[in-house]
Amino acid sequence: MWQVVGHETIVALLDNSLKGGNLSHAYLLVGPPHVGKMTLALNLAQALNCQEDQKPCGTCTSCQRIAGLRHADIQVIGLDGRAEIGIDQIREMERSATLKPFEGRNRVFIIDGAEHLSTEAANCLLKTLEEPPPNVQLMLLAVNERLLLPTVLSRCQKLELRPLPTPVVERALIEHWEAAPELARLLARLSSGCPGWAVGAFHDDRIPGERASRLSALLQLTSVGRAERFAYAAQLASQFSKNREAVREVLSLWVGWWRDLLLIKGGCHDFIINIDQEATLYNEAENYHLTGIKGFIESLQQAVEALGRNANPRLVLEVLMLNIPQKEGG
Ligand SMILES: [Zn+2]
Image (cartoon, rainbow, N blue to C red; front, top):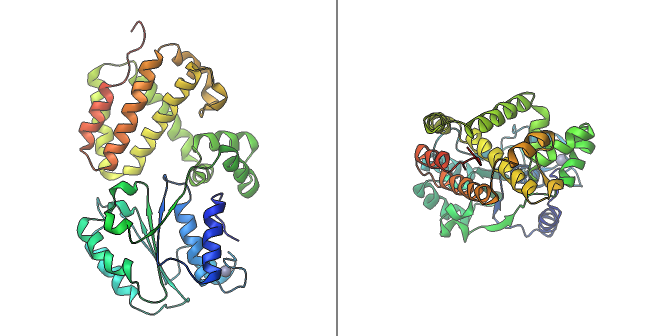
């Protein structure tokens, strides 16, 4: 059983290619964070090494070792806290790609955050991408394919994983993870269609507290002066150098919040994400003009994109702070 939630067409394509023996050497899985790229890549790695007839079974030793990232033939290459995936990591990968599989039938290399390959590393990867050794499968995962070299792009088969409809995430939380219906509904909305986020949040007791403190910081920032906003920008920027993901999460929460305000202004409150904060959202929506909200959502999207392109985080975040809309009458 493929474990990935949703993405049925892509699963069917991979399953058929696997059965027909015509998998591409290298796939590029593109989609937002937590949409299911890693789960899908690991599922394919399981299918390529499963010991049972119905591949991937999910329960044989091989499948279990892969799910736990303990299989000697499956390697995940990522940023590991660095700013780039370096040429040393790719050289090391290429060296192990030439070795025979150790415990399974196929070696699978998953490059997580392929858009962060340094130019040198990407160029070094080209040869393996074009002609990988036998029994080697490459999986590149990326959020933003526009940051990949065209030469890398052209050597991979691209599969695009789009956010899932909220009810699909909600149902998965209830059926597979036994979440209470009300919590499942909230987490599915907050996940923006990315089941990995919802499941992570369901298992992580810190998430509700973290979200509450991020929301309260957001609300506070809308009523303070420039100095406090810049101080917050500096704090986020320094956090960005240590934990990009956390800052991305803060900004994504902001996008969700301001999008909710926009929906309330437009009378589409059925679609709001922060359903447990409805009263506050209604109060806040009173404070802004529609154009101010729209403009700030655009600024947020630009900031997220600029950070993904490695722009100076402090500058990007300061500009963002300047663009927080004025409250009416404030
Ligand atoms: Zn198996």
